[in-house]
Image (cartoon, rainbow, N blue to C red; front, side):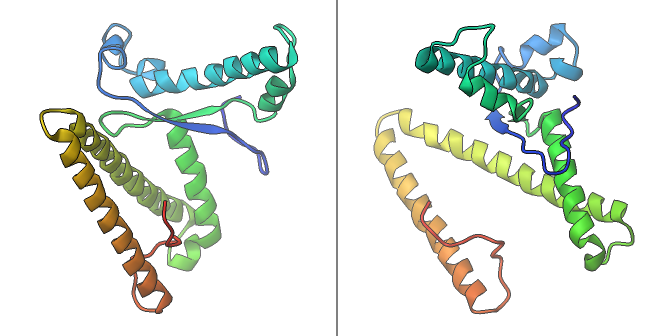
Length: 202
């Protein structure tokens, strides 16, 4: 009921982002700054309902099933329980569901590798893993938001489309060059920044 998975249980999550706009952020001023009034939690609370509504639409369209009856799409969706909303806000904050998932992942890693890496206890190992996960998520969130803003520059001003195309081409070239170098260093057996990625387009 609280979203905590049981061992072996399959769960569905949907990653969402919200930008700084009156719809998402100003509404919280009249409803408080905690709980579901928090912008990321408010958005996360809408995710499961959106999936249920979409499943009902598919059941109605393809199977002629109307509420309160549940069709094949709705039945399959229900097997996964509540769909969790992994929501990242404009300022790098994230939803409660994201914090819970990070905690579960950190604990699983700590139980498997924590003491081998020199931690004095599982609690200490879990804390270290959570720190690593949050650091990665923070960098990823801010980097991708900045990339989204930069991508929008191609629609602003004279010559912006051409500049945007050149900027995208430069990024792709550098991105894949960096991945190739990391892959070659990894396969050569030397020190590497490669972290479990396979070098492939995409």
